[in-house]
Length: 154
Image (cartoon, one colour):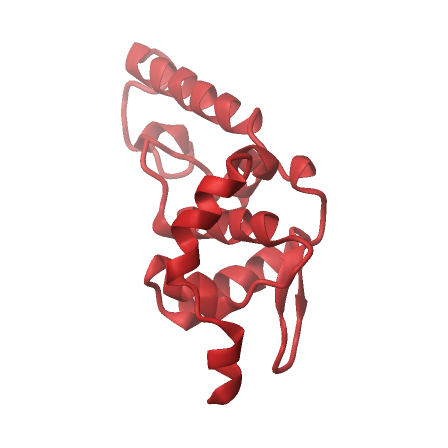
């Protein structure tokens, strides 16, 4: 299984919001920490906001924060939102399937089992879990953040 970078950075954005709570997280910080373009993070934050995972504050001192408690945000739910259907193989989707073995293929059934097991692990994981080692995470990202004073001077 390989998830898209979009999903990865959605998780990283939620993780950072959990680490910084109750402070606002700036899009610029997420972009700088993860070496991404600002528009890419803006798109992710917008989608997370529409889904009710974060709330955004507009303006010069704006940013975003979690809209729910981190223990209420299930990683599997976020993955489903950002990835859409996890059609690991063509035969998972009956509308686009061209395989003549559909319905009798053991490989297809096992791939479905594997995908379900993968998602079961993510369904047992919350944003609180991925932010639980807060001290280590903050220590690692602190040198990568843009200080607010530096930002205000521009």
